[in-house]
Amino acid sequence: MTIRVIQWATGPVGGAALQAIIDSPDLNLAGVYVFTESKVGVDAGTLVGRPPTGVLATNDRAAILALDADVVIHAASKAFPNNTNTDDIVALLESGKSVITITSYSHLPTYGADVHARINNACAAGGSRFHAAGEHPGFMFERLAATVTGLSGRVDRITVQEFVDCRAISERQMLVDLMGMGKPPEELSVDSRVFRGLSSQYEQSLAATADVLGLTIDEIRPSIHTATSDHDIEVACGVLPAGTVVGQIMSWTAYRKGVGVLVAEEYWTATGDIAERDLSEDSQSLVRVIVEGYPLLRVELKFDNAAVEGLPGVVSGQAAVAMTAIRAIPYVLESPPGVVIPAVFGAYQFPEAR
Image (cartoon, rainbow, N blue to C red; front, side):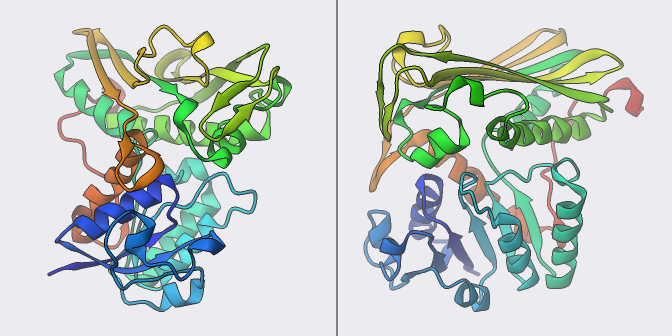
């Protein structure tokens, strides 16, 4: 039986997901929701470098809610000032459609009690399923690092480091409004609005990983360090003015009884002038997992920044985020209604869980 899929939003990640839906013989595109006015009425295939599909993009929310579909791939930006993501997800779930999102909902209790309750209630009302996909957060710590601990006799500390070359990011909303590049350095602190928006994502990642490992954490402490340039920096989406942020090192550490046990570290750069030594010279991005304990384990995974066919400005790292949602579709639909959390087989369990 072919699965009927709606694509919600067609930015870099959503566009990659839409292309994969069109290309898959097991998926049938039922509808496309867009935010950009110029995309309204355009055939879905035209949007992503594929032949016409007969499905036209719309910005009519009610029309999308009324469609008959099994699942919605929700890829709305996290950078819009007027963020309606929770309201949209709840409405879709209540309409009977399951939702797989690549936005920041990887650990609903940490996201917030109100959102946690609303999404669970919506699943119950619609007989639908909700799953938060994503590369990091969503996969690297919660699934990859947790799976690696299946080799461990003892785990003392897990660190996931991500090194990202930001120069190829084509959306200014993503690079500046969400990630904080190109902003005055005084606007990026652990208490700033931009950092708090990011921090929620990584706090959820740590909390979700703790659940997998049977670990109770007492607190999460964040930190941020920024770097600026004395000259303008050209990137794919424009120019970052001299004196603004072009590099960041951020970290989040989850503590148990005063000891840091889970650590997420982000190294971002938008210029080769200050590139972190662990960023590869050929603009690849790197994820490193370090499991300290017995034995000491270290895993490295590189993403290239190759362009995606038919999607100008979209690179393969962004497509990888989309693939976590596409690959999840059959597993989510086979699950009972409610919030779907992927099982990790054989992960280490901290002694307090025994």
